[in-house]
Each structure stands twice: as structure tokens, then as C-alpha cells.
Length: 246
Length: 246
DNA sequence: CCGCCGGATTGATATATGTTAAGTTTCCGC
DNA sequence: GCGGAAACTTAACATATATCAATCCGGCGG
Image (cartoon, rainbow over all chains, first blue to last red; front, side):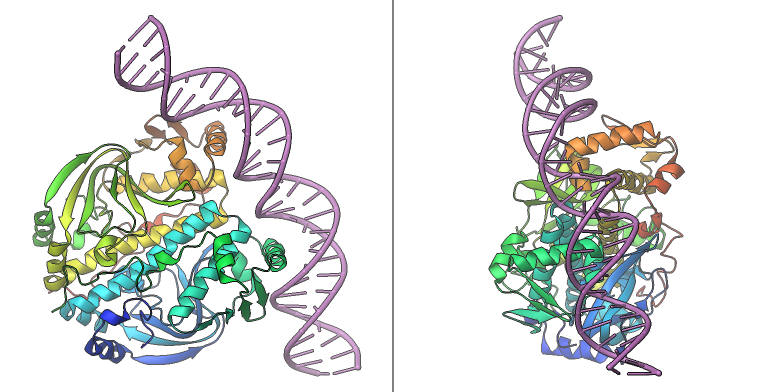
């Protein structure tokens, strides 16, 4: 779990807290592509940390598989289920992944005894909410090409936080179908849009690999501003104000 | 603050906890229409409970005022700011409103001493996240008319939880411009869509008042399923499992 | 090596929505 | 009650995207 909040608030977590978090893991498991780890409406007794691979948040409606969020390594994917108990969406792997499970009983002990760590966990779930909000803006305001560029820009930054991006792109298991579902458009149209971005030399997309020739140009095209990701030195500066640290 | 989580988890909150929450309020204030209560990027030292009126979550981008969420009485609007410290969006009143402020220092004490109540507060922020996700689905999948119907259906349920809806509609200060910004469309188009819904007898929209002739029909049209709102008896059934209650 | 299959690509046509512009109604201060 | 601003309404036209249909391509099992 050493990737948890890396690039974000890792520095305000003490070594003791890090070790404590590690000790919560009950089981590590390799899961194949397309596995539903936690289903909408089912009572959850554990939450999942993503160690390797990609995970999508999916809401099914009248046959459509809408992707409402994407998770990368280091994300405490369904920590939401600790407070919500039953999720409103499915948690589905994209590509083979490695996950770690943390029982809710142990999280309850943390909440009872570790206010500072509790607040960090709470923070990490609200980070997801901030990302949701940016997706809403993206869907309200951008057109398909810009939406795709926005998702790619976001993924680059989030993967960069955990050391999985390089200056010219990153590896990614998402198919064009997934990207279409995440952009609120069709596979046919996302394909046309990819072609157009390729011609503009903003983006190259091959099986499993995204290439970004000029990241600044891509981000400008996507109206992307990274501050909502709460990376170190951006929106989040002074966590310790009126601290709950013991 | 007696409206907080009403219709949702109010029943798992003890009288002691309710009184404790009430005691956190430092100041109650009447604020006029269009006031920005908390601005993106500004360090927050208190959070706001909405007592009366409406509040919008707004993200400005290149001149557009995108509404990424709406809050109704009983909502602990910017509780997110307690864990995030700086918000990624603005909190803006729609119509004159009555709000109560809770200092973060007092919330920090709650986190340190009241694990059960902490978890309820955490829950309420994740409820916002669940609503964000449903908005994402709405924007990905529905067309403008269905989006508008969806927002109206959602508002009816949320207002109903706190006793502010009636069987045939509710009062609402949102202008057509607001609805357009929340549906990711233009004021001109939202107007066309309102006309069409009126003709279909699904919706009547006058200044300050929404009339719903046939709620079941409206919800069917909007593909609306209320379970993501975590009303009593829906997704959220057994909060006390592996409880943190002392 | 062949054939198959899932994913990617391209084309033609239909539809929803954006844009611009002009008019109408409602509200509110004077 | 009058004048003006703000909100709402309608129209004509431009464009992005959906839909339907066909083809292409690459990996993989036989």
C-alpha cells in the first residue's frame, strides 16, 4: 500500500501510520480482466486497494455500461463502501490487475483510534468526489475530442503521481469502447476523434500504449487544469491547520 | 441542524449526537441570491450547513459557469472543505438563503472523540459523491429533455426527505439559465426542452415553482431510479454492521 | 497456413443541439 | 403607471454526434 496518496499527502503520513495501513491488508489477489470486484447494492465487508492494473467504476442502465470513474495503482478504490456499506456502482477491472483487500472491521478500529489517519482516508474519498466534479464539467462543456484529451491528460497526471507515467506517455489497457463509455459517446465516434487527434499530433493511441508528443498542447486543447487532483503544492497546502494529529 | 440526514440516516443518530451537532454551530446568517459563500482555492476554516434556500456548486471555466451540484436544506454543503481544506469549486447561493457555519476546529474534536458521528459525517460527503456519479451517467447517456427531467426528479426526492416537496411538485428558485448550466446545454435549448416536456404533460415550470402532474411518468422518462440517494430502506440498510458505535 | 473473431476503421444519412438574432413577457424601482 | 432590465420564447441556420452498415486488421487456435 506504499503507493497510497503518493504525490498527494504521502508526506503528512507518519511512518507509523504507513505501517499501520500496511498491516490492515488481509489478502492480496490477482484478478483477470473484466472482473466485477464489488457489485452495486451488495453489502461490502472489505474495501479494495489497487496495486497494479486499472479499475473502472461502472453504472449499468438499460444495457449501457457507463464508466463514471477510473482508478489507477495506489487508489483505495472502494473505500467509499466503508461508509456507504452498499455501493451505487460496480467496481470492474480493466485488464488483469493486482488488488489488496482491507476488512471493514479493521477500518472501524482506525476510525475509533486514529483521528489523523481517519482524516487522510476521508480525504482520499473526497479526492474521488473532486475528480467526479471535473468529469461533470468535462461532460457539460467539452466536445468529444476535448473530453478524450481531458481523460488522457488526467490519467497521465495520476499515473505520474505514482511513478507510472513517462514524459512521452503511459501504458494503458483501456480499449476504444472503454474510452467511448467514459466520454459519453459511441465507439464509432471516439474512433473518428482519435483519428483527428492523431492528425493534430496531440495524441497517439495504440494497443496498450498512449503517446503524448506535446503534453502542454494536449492540456491546452482539453482545457485541462491539474489543480483538482490535489497534487503536492497545488490546492492542498496546509493539511495540518487545526490538526487532528495527536 | 435538525434536517441533517433526515430521510436518510437520521435514525441511527442518537439524541446526544444530534444535540452535539447542534452545539457546533457558531453563527447563523441570511445571505442574498448569488453570494459566493466559499471560493475555489481559498483555505476554509468553517463549513456551511444549508438551512433554507438552494445552493449550487459551480466550476468556472473560460467564462462558463458550470453547475456540478445542487444542495437543498439539510445538506452540509461544504463539509468536503473540512478534509480538502481548499475546495476545487465555488459554493454559490441560488435565491436568498439561510445558512449555519460550523468551525473546523470543532469538527476536528468530533473526529478525535466521536467515531460514530464521524462516520455519519463521512457518509454524508460520500452521498454527494454518489450524486455526482449519477450526474455523470445522466450527462453521458441522456439527452437534454431527459437530463432536465432527471434533475427535477432528483430534487423532488431530496426535498421530500426534508419535508419540502408535495405530491404535485415543489418550490424552486432555479432559473432556466441555472437548469441549462446543470444540464450541460444552453438556455435557448433548455427552453425548447421545457416547452416539449410541458406538451408531453410531464412537467410544468413557472417562476419559483415546479409542477409534476405524474411523477411516475416523469421518472420513467428520465430513467430515474432513486436508490443512489440512499433514502431509508433503499441501498443503505445496515449501517451498524461492524459498527463504530461506542 | 487458413479461418475466425474481436476490435478498429470508414462511409452515408438522420437527429440533437449550438449559434445568432430578434421578439415578448415579467418584474421592479421610481 | 412608466421605463428599463432581466428572463423567457421563438425562428432560421450551422454543426457535432448518433445510427446503421460495411470493411479492414491482427492475433490465435486449429
